[in-house]
Image (cartoon, rainbow, N blue to C red; front, side):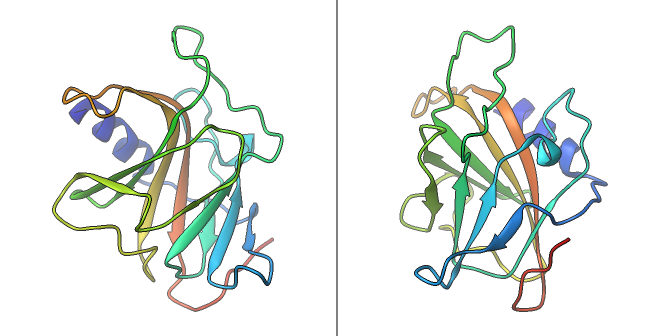
Length: 164
């Protein structure tokens, strides 16, 4: 798991880009932001993309594949994703189950702490997060995570999402 964390953190270092692909959720979910997975925001090994999601501070984040086919590494025995992992800084690592198809809202209730002592406290103003989609063998104590898609999330210090 230490290698996975280092891989995801190394992808996160020095990433710059745009905020297209992130937008404020429909009025029925006023405190949540929706990010749609796509190739432009995929930072997984070999993808070489630089777009990042820029969102407003929020207690939750809705992730949608919305018809996007999440790439599966050719050398992997995993055929479909089963989890989303969130990394915040060096000390916070969270996981939520996900089928890779149905939109999921990531909240403190469904993000389980994998490393660190804090519960998930939302997407905080001015902070950066790594969003990883893949297949893991949770709750195995020697958890392995096959990374299929990685995105970067920058949370604005302001209360609104910007876009282009």
